[in-house]
Picture 1 (cartoon, helix red, strand yellow):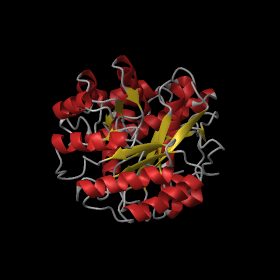
Picture 2 (cartoon, helix red, strand yellow; picture 1 turned 180 degrees about the vertical axis):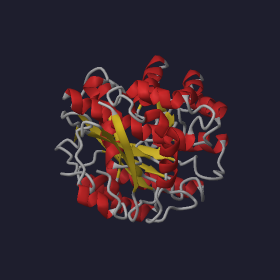
Picture 3 (cartoon, rainbow, N blue to C red; picture 1 turned 60 degrees about the vertical axis):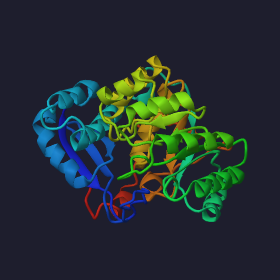
Length: 376
């Protein structure tokens, strides 16, 4: 089975806010779907956390390398693409695009063998996983309302992030966390994301340490991105000085970028994004490194239904990956998948056991957000 064509379509019109200081507008594209089409008619799905113009340009660069390649060898083909891109870009849009290709190739391999990707990765440790509702912070009153609404929908874990946190005052930060804990209750998982990868993040080690000590009082399960993305030494020092687990890694690409962080003991929880880091193949290698260094692997998932489907398969294949991120209120997650997503009575999300990603897109819903471009 050979790769005949790779298509890419950007999602427009309902792009959710990202919390960035230079905030996203609904008509800006940061999520792109890809489809790997084979000479035997099968198609695999992938997702890329990058603008469609950049993805299409990257595909044009990569096309001579993937054209007519074996569509059932995701790791070899993806590694071929990476190895031949050292001079044009180790990371960034090239690696992001390879991520989408790799996800789609794993989807194809699953379809061809009749197996879910998690089983092909070595076996399924679970058939359901707890999704944590991921939403942006607001002032205490509106945030409380949203959290109660999501709890009513069945979510039993929450991550709140960005917004005014770390950007106005310590008093407001604590008021937000206090309100969130009171809203979700003492027995529910609550995580906090400072958003240190925001442009020109102002806070440093001392702020992060003081804030981590405050978060410990509210039994926060982890403190995510408290520092700038390159502050490796400060991350390692912070992790040693606080009882709250430290999480990060969503902006890194390629397994080689994660290695020094894991070896330095800078993180308790590592969060590669499957739609950026190099796909399922690269995520698996990072997860193995994390295991060897005593770090939990919980994928970052602020993306699309296809990205969520990939995260579900990864969660099935690693014993400690018992959570997945679920961005709330995004049509790119909730609307474009046929049948939608349904939490069970325990607030858990079933992991598909059908071939590949186990995902079927609603083609009409996809077209609604692609400006008429067809993916399949």
